[in-house]
Length: 432
Image 1: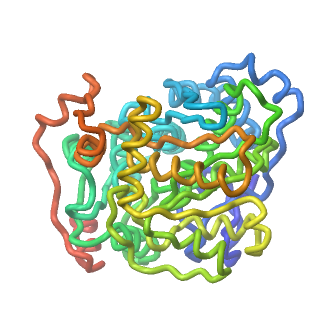
Image 2: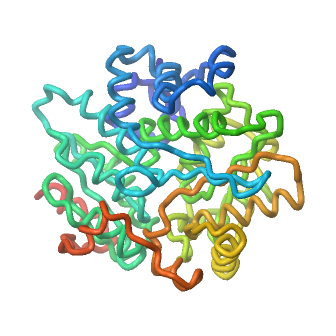
Image 3: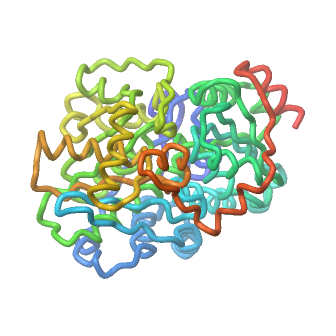
């Protein structure tokens, strides 16, 4: 299969080039030329399949033309080695827990798969691969851990100073080795802009073998579709409409859901749940896309003012009217989010993180305004301990740190401060 740029100003490339390059030269995003549907037999037997078996089927459906089936199966099985359980809060409300990976966030799925795939593609190369990644929190830790000690690959993580939680920061600033953390004195949008500028800089691209590990990389996006199928498998009543509520920042997670639907997964509706950074909900309401500087909130991983994957969403739909048929957008402020965390704890004795709380609010609104008789699935994207300083005061108790992660808090932070000037980043990368 070939992968084209959403801007369609460059020639399509094969999977290896799309994955290792990360970003097309025209500053678009790679998309597969064709999204094949899965056969009916797959859905008929889905309840009998393990998560890994589902992931292998979905991966082969999309990538089978480009990678040997046995090798692809090996990559999937080694990457997707943790569960995604569906927790029932009520007859209409489910929580899909995506935090059982090694960094307690949904991005472990994409980062681990991408690391294995890139490692496969660079085997035998003489030049090292330099990965640049911007993070508003969870991406940095997932990518850092996914690529830690992978031969012939170096990772540089750019993150906004003072705008990620302490736990998140410790996860990607304490590894060392082939992982470098750059603490940018700006916002996530500044970090993302620096990464994009680096990919378009001629000198850097002539000197370094650059690639990206953000959700702008197609290999991060594809494995995020796996758990939509896994969630559907776990539903008891599949006759009711299935609605996925996706806490959204850069919109890679929701775009992966759209890919799953294109492959035949019977999803009735998507709900894009955002915080005060309501760019997409506003677009769906007005038809006008108006990016702006991001606003800092307590659900910081969604603090994105110019979502990269909007290009892919436009590419899939073409017109706002078509997008509205499948996606409803809702936005909530910090006060509402804090109240939702308290409500979920009091009503269901379940501790939810601030991003999941935004999703919970969106599902409540959807049920009230659109349809009460649904399977509403909220993607719980991170373990609440990653935002303990926000969650604990709301629920009136400490969030327990999983034992396997406690050691991080004792490790010294290793990061390099930089400003938002591109020349500073360029100079650092050329001298590194």
